[in-house]
Image (cartoon, rainbow, N blue to C red):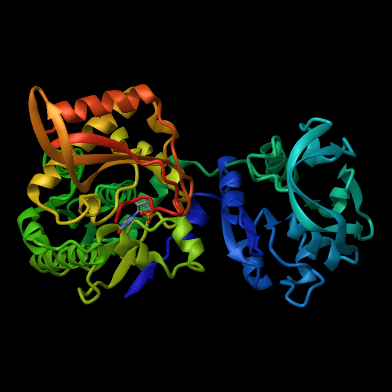
Length: 527
Ligand code: XMP
């Protein structure tokens, strides 16, 4: 099976300009790329080992060297060729990247007498620097370093400093070499965007041609000529990535695309119908939409199963079985469409995790269904760009802004055995909760929020009678990366209104609890 790598071709036609980020192991490498793209300039992250000939072929308008955990003088130092600075391409070194520039060009890097960490006031020392033209004389920047540039290479001048860091920024303008000891890409650097924008536009001379409308147009054209009259299959989960991928393909090849949407009976309230309304036969897209209502077979499989991992496995396996059956019915499909996005590509060392992500999303795809090629039209995009492309393609807001929803669905939000009755309870409670949170306008700040059904029943009183019913747990977390999360402080009125509606409107629930646990020690989902 071969992947259609849209990378090079998109680059040639959608964006004529590119900034190359060379990754030295810093934690913010993706963020740098995102910030550059927010400036409408296309940007790619590559390992620092990228060969010079490759770089020449790519012809980037500028290169950014990221931070990293090492010391340039240590045995474990990760270096690049000094030649990089002589290619006539502007270079911006950030943190470790700035030290590397100093070190390789003959300056001196040492352990700093005082290491700086956190928000630090930086003084602009040279108002002529292109990077600082629009920046205040004194500005708060995010520092995180134990080494510093003790001696600059020949021809460089200091452009910013702090009391503990005499070279917080330096440059050799005639060679377009710039170095920042701090991190302009993080929000804590108040005027960091101005600096990055100045590098990209004033130093590198970019015009800003990375726009979602042209991405959509060009990608559709490329898919058309690539797939021709072949058949493609997209496993549609209703999440934003697979939805946007499906729409791009549908614009390109229409009815030659089959979207298989498996309704496993573990979706949120009305979710299956919403997906069908968009992609089904009366929807806006000319695709061959196949909704498989498979809830009974999933419930059957899950009967009596309480162990979370077992539940996950069973749901994943059953999904594969349904998918295989459908793929076989369609027959002779050459292309498999996946909604892989750029963070998956970067994290896996460019390309390896594509399949893993998709497995994760849809619960597993069969390995042995024979596809000639995998099509990944979103593999260059960050999540916010995928959403922008979705808007550009006219997808409804509720699909574009949809919060992440796990492949195993409500199966892992019902603690213990899954039954149809429990699914109904959690669907209703969750719908009320989402409605109330959205009504209060609190949804925009939350990473994820949902209701789960605990396996606990307790005594209550309703009217004049005793009840012995389930407890619903409400969860809301703030998170950017979903690896860690904090429990959100939702307004009390929202929680009270939600509670009162749930116990009144959802039969079988007499108690509502709010989960105050962060991740770690808990996870976001309950199972
Ligand atoms: P946890 O519970 O591990 O969740 O803190 C982190 C994020 O991953 C999502 N999640 C999944 N997504 N398939 C998915 O597509 C899964 O099996 C799965 N399990 C967890 C979860 O919703 C949260 O956003």
